[in-house]
Length: 176
Image (cartoon, rainbow, N blue to C red; front, top):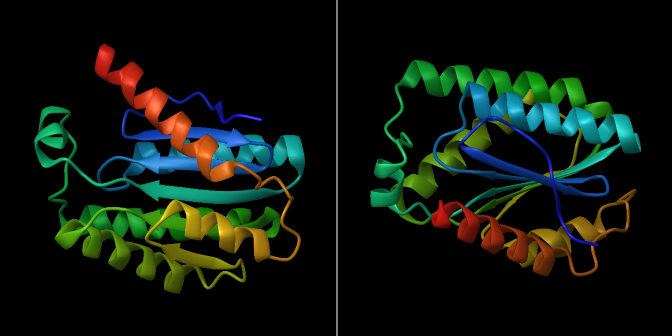
């Protein structure tokens, strides 16, 4: 079973799902539109399956490509704080239906540190009981999700399916 795209008008997040597993791939700092799109995707999957497993990916940022795509990495503190609050609110809202949440941070260096700091703040602010863990690789995240009680059992080949989906989507985007 492959990753099925979830429609969104946000240009800084790519969304898909395989059963109750929602995959969000963020480009740049999570902002109002990308956070809303991810939350809407999770609500859509919850409506269909009654539960959701979230797998968020922050790929390595090619700074020139990000600049050309108008992806902002230098974010004012107020905007970071607003993103943190919004993410905490959504996390709390959806917690009753969320089995687990894995975050894969593939971005190295200062940008990676910024993202990890953001995620740590969100985790602390939400006080959620949902199992949440951050990883440096997709394979590690999927392996951990397989161990979470009540996981939906849709993880065979998930790593390969996500990698294929990301690659195909990036190729289609580059061709435009």
